[in-house]
Figure 1 (cartoon, rainbow, N blue to C red):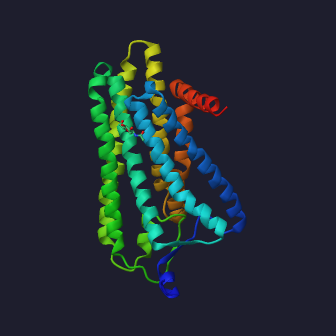
Figure 2: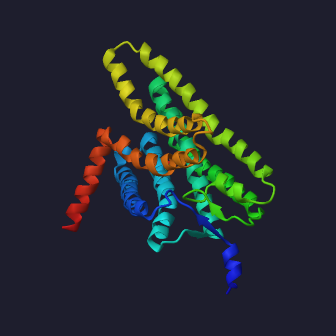
Figure 3: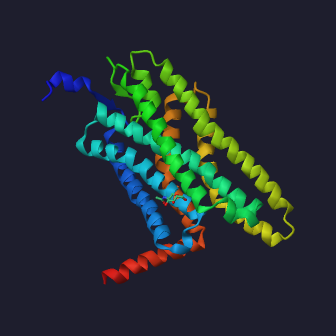
Length: 312
Ligand SMILES: *[C@@H]1O[C@H](CO)[C@@H](O)[C@H](O)[C@H]1NC(C)=O
């Protein structure tokens, strides 16, 4: 049993998205919807794993992406739901670090996986004859497992660098989950090592994938425009359109939000970018992929009818 004053020093206050209780009720309903739609991601994983026609690199990566999106949403939403329900804003230090760890873990995979999916599209359209040799199950398995291990090591380093920081005085996090920047701002010890590490990681997991995606798509578009038949061009464009919308959503909002001058929107900026990243995109991904994709829709229908038959 820890003495009372000990507990209070090991807690943070999450100020959340809104300061008003009326809005909190609305937020509660919205977050609940978020969780329900996030379940759509689990349905996609089930549909892909139960249909052997969909065991191709593209769908397996999509299943990985769905898992990551599900993780991103539930990691941030569940604590907000619990806090709104209990009318409390506190989060324990260990809970905060756990949330931060999973946030890094899933966002790093998210960002790099989208570049890997762009590479998959690039090979499929620019080197169709060599597709099966280049995107072999072995390479894909290696890419996916390396990515999870890579993300694990970066996230754990983030946490290890965080553990030695001392927090005194103000414990109010001006955010709705334990994110990196708001936490670093609260520390009363030197955070320069953390900030350097953040820059290095941002270069590795945001800038590099973004540049790769740009390069793949420039190459892709040049190839598509040169295709002889109009039908072929249309088919090739529609193949990449859903992936391109995910890229635009993820990087477009991040870049758009950061272009906003800081005199106008510092606090809003941070929250808006996080809301897009943790709540909106993970919710849209299942729709973007499944509504436009006949094979995935069929697999989902099969999955649901199988469930109905087995339960009746
Ligand atoms: C992630 O992708 C790899 C390689 O394509 C695949 O083997 C694995 O089953 C996928 N994981 C999930 C959860 O879909």
